[in-house]
Image 1: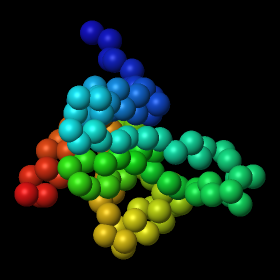
Image 2: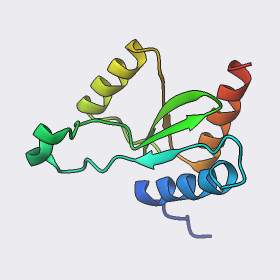
Image 3: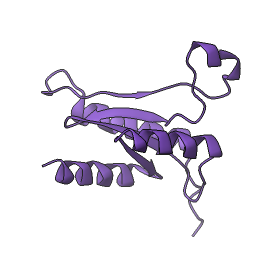
Length: 117
């Protein structure tokens, strides 16, 4: 049997966004949650208008919480600016997660829901 190639980070992120939008962001959901990507890749010339190197791939609301999620291919490490961003976010009291799959993302939501009760 041939080994299935690893998904790209963009494909993993797309799966997460589509799943979350379909489960928490539709017009009939109350409250209607948010998930979005901040496009900051290779935008160094735009630092003066607010581009922040290292910002997480996804920012979302979930059950009254703001979560920062970095999407990585399995085994891929964070870059130094991403570590710096994580430290800043966590010092402010927010939750920051690194996920490598839709399954991990679903698990983090379950943990956040359980811890928020």
